[in-house]
Amino acid sequence: MKEADRCLLCGTPVCIDACPVLLDVRGMNEAVARGDFRKAYDRIRETNPLL
Ligand code: SF4
Image 1 (cartoon, rainbow, N blue to C red):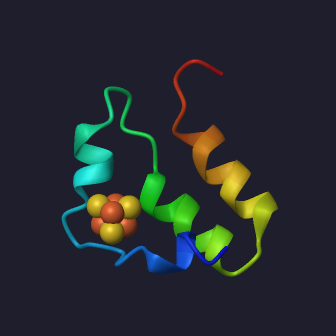
Image 2: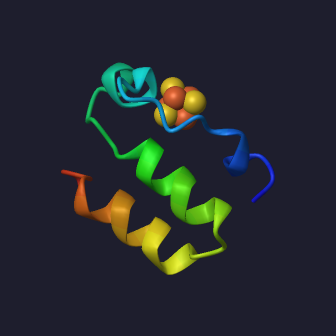
Image 3: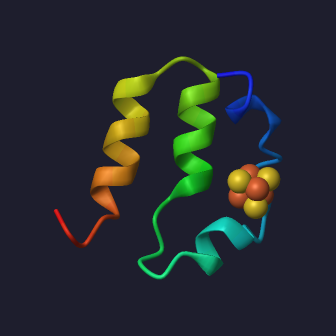
């Protein structure tokens, strides 16, 4: 949670742009920082084309 809280929630997130499947890394970090692991899981799952 401390590490996720370091995320700057960038307006133009290079983490997402650099991801070949455009996972919502920013959204996951935001949820993890709040301790909402269910939401973090959902955000990654919703944008994961492999699931
Ligand atoms: S994880 Fe993404 S949104 Fe967060 S600081 Fe890094 S590039 Fe920005």
